[in-house]
Length: 329
Image (cartoon, rainbow, N blue to C red; front, top):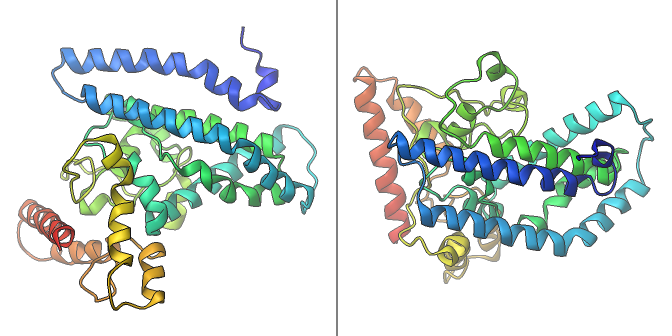
């Protein structure tokens, strides 16, 4: 039997994962059957195997880093600004604070290239299904605790922070599906499958949108929300497309590109740092374009009096060609 009281103790995260993994295995099987019988082709065997491999690598590194992560978070907790009395409002505050911390973490993952190099593994599949939720950014345990430590400094116990994170993460895995089109009024409050399909899209309109994992309110507050548009069908994956589906290639893909950029002859040390920490797409000679630049051009084009569908297609094709040209240079 599941002892819910243990969820709020040191073994809380393990309790959450232990009892939900079999549930997700069953859901994935059902979604695969649904995909097969409806001939929707939303699953591919090698892709699922890569998802499982990345999840296991991430979990293994998480175990290795667990002691150090807790040491850092406990350091901040011991110097906390506030003391909270545990109760319903405390737990509501923990979950809200954790969900916001993840939003910030996720935003940085998309806007700083060194973090994107880790996070890209979660996006570089051309498929979108429940198993995609397990396609983990493998190296994230190396630094994830740094985004959660401010919560410990505010007085939330590190174990409670991790319980909130693991619980919200389970929900965040669930929204990786094309089988649920809408969740009704919950679309205004929670991150839903529709919202997260937008997040995983590589269409210009949808790039770097819907960063939340539990609540969609952060995206609406900070201007990163985008509704799924039936006029702009979602395309999954990343640009440029990764030619090899080998797991090692997919895991180190962006790291190799960064290495190539920072080893360029004749550039300053400052520019080498910028290749690490500036937005993906930035280039020292001005030939690159970031997502914001692409989206600015996209918005300007759809204001012209040409048919909208033609404009969207043209913009997407140009985006694909330009990003591929940058890759080939």
